[in-house]
Image (cartoon, rainbow, N blue to C red):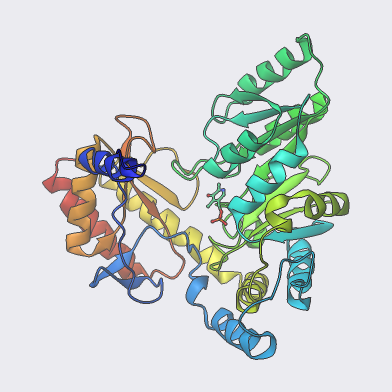
Length: 397
Ligand SMILES: *Cc1c(COP(=O)(O)O)cnc(C)c1O
């Protein structure tokens, strides 16, 4: 008899043969500028902890205090008995920070996208996505029964074409929803949200932006992409984000009108059917919002570091793509070479992972670096020196 589970090993072995399996590294301690990865002290150059908040004393203190006052767990899903005062306070504070009428917190950003998107558009509707949108958006779209359209990455003209075709088509859609990442995580470019929103308005479509890599980074005080473009809430209907990146904790969220909030929490299955955040998580997220409001220096520092690093890398002759954000891809081309460069950097003491096919197109392999506000100038010089040495050895520059 054939073993019904034999495919598990076969498929895993296939991945190993193609060198496509994830080799998990172990962080022995907090995610700080200098940290321990697989037992080696290295400079962290690829975390999403843009502002260094994951180890900020105020966040740690708030988490510990919440354990004392509210316990280790919430006891339930939020619609039944797991809706604590802390959850409500976080949503009020976040909405204020975002300048929105209301916010709703999900367990993760993935849960927000996969829970809300299929409720916003169904049978007879059309969802139009940027072709490079995040996987959690793609899964959300797959769960919906809506028709799907795709426009070329960051290309409003192509979006206009898709909208025109939809209008001229035989079937008239009940609703049209346009979804885009705010900052694209592989290239670090910013979505032309202003143009997307104007086109949407012209065509009576709804706009949903996933700002996971934009909040804490873009806009005044790190308020995100909607503030960055100065767009009104009548132009961007759903601003989705996460506490797992610049906010340094974990948790997804959406901001917009009160109507959006009321709709979202009553309809999103991921929200209704999954336990709510433990008090320590909620309190740390609250403290993160507080730090962003009171300590604008972190966002300023992030951008100073970003400009310094990009300039030095360009001067050395590295191709750093067309990023406009603290995500700086160091283009290498061939997958094997990107892996070698990453390994050499690690040897010298810089932790930055290669991004290779199928995460990016063939021939577009790169080392993706993500800047951090907690890095000092000496740290940046160390990293730049490491790139220079390893890059020259491998003939990348
Ligand atoms: C990381 C990320 C998510 C998922 O957020 P989590 O809170 O970590 O689940 C969603 N969208 C984008 C664009 C992301 O980069």
